[in-house]
Amino acid sequence: MRTEQELRQDIPILRNKQFWSIFSIAFLIYFSNNMLAQTLPKYAYDLGASAQIIGVLAGAFAVCALMLRPVSGQLVDNENQLLLLRVTIGIILLSVTGLVFSQKVGLLILFRGINGLGWGIGSTLCMTIASGCFTRKKLGSGIGIYGLGQTIAQATAPMIGLNVAAVYGYNFLYQFNVVICAIAFILTYFIVVDTKRHRAHKYSVKISAMIAFPALPPAVMIMANSIAQSSITAFLVIYATSMQITQIGVYFTVQAVTVLCTRPFWGKLTDTYGSYRIILPCEILIALGLFVIYQAAELWQFLVAAVLVGVGTAGDQPALMSECIRRVPSEERGRASNTNFLGIDLGWFIGSNLAGFVVSLVGYQDLYLIFILPVVLATIFYMLMQKNNTVLEQTSGRDS
View 1: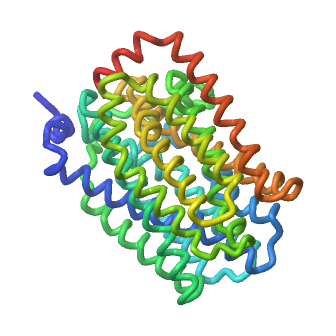
View 2 (view 1 turned 60 degrees about the vertical axis):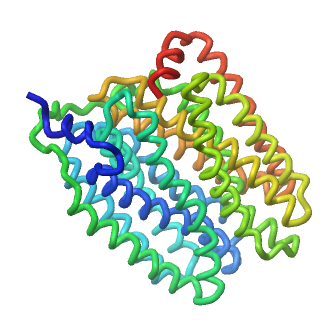
């Protein structure tokens, strides 16, 4: 007899209430996170923080998320996912509440770190629950739709956050974040998770229990992209403001709208040719976008970079995310999701802290030239690894 989860997997996406519930929860958390990521560095800058301290603030979220990555996948695969979801969103809610009362950089770093602790488990958990809403054959398209929530959040959160902060102040902005996270917590009561299925309840400190090794090649590529993106998120607003460009928030909207418009195009190409042939041109576009930022002196040039980075991200983001999960058995999806987010968090941790150090040495402009290097190196690594895995790639190209 088929399980309740298997029956839910056959429901068309548009009528899959389970999927849209977890999609909404993840979207709200992503929205809050993107809003904080874009506004906290500027707030700290206004409070008098140095470039290195701003880098620490931007990296605090990632380093705290990284602290939980060794056990995050195991917790998701072993414990009551619904209870775990409520606990992690509760932690995120606590952290944004703390920001409301923070007027010193030290407190901003503390509560941003607590936010990262909740995210360290919550991001893995949301993606795992979402992937459980689909059969393996529909996984690529399902995760692609799930990823649209991130894209929509990226499109709307920066502009809304920066404008709200400019008009009403940062305190009001963080109160708004409290409301967003509270709604996400309420939505957990619309999620149905199979709590009766057998769970091993086995934990290990072995690396193999924390990381899905088959998912490492795409995760390394994800890490490189996160390193590049961290430089944009942490310092682009400050860099553009120093050049008297006040409407730089439009950059993030243009980038995300570009992703929304071009993702269907990339999806068809991925279905036809497989992700191996898609990743290389996408990474070239991202590297080219960083180079345009390095050369930019006016707003329209930054917006050209936004389009280039957006087109590249639209192609490689869903392909790499779904590939991480597709490479492992269904019972190990928590570990694979964790490996995906380990790449993201490690990239943000390395990128944010390294960016602050690089800015203090060479300035904002040269930062974007230097950060092309990790994208190039990771792309070479990915291509070399994929050549040794052509059979798997052909399969994923048919199934995605």
